[in-house]
Image (cartoon, rainbow, N blue to C red; front, side, top):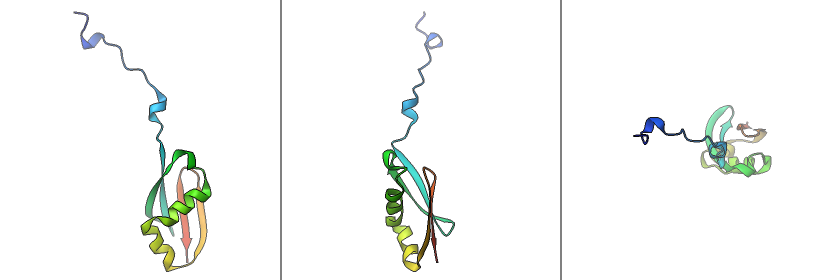
Length: 85
């Protein structure tokens, strides 16, 4: 009768399974969230790559076409903020 679940070992914790393969970036235009992108984890800190992906997102393009891009704010692994006037 030792095969009961009460006597079974707990599963082992393995941290590698908790790390995502992608990084989610919310994209703000003039302080309001207008979209989000998922980029590969190995490109998550590459400012130029993330900004180009953010600018190519459909909903963000619409706002960029309405005015001039004044400032690009990039916080690695957190957020992208674009200021348009």
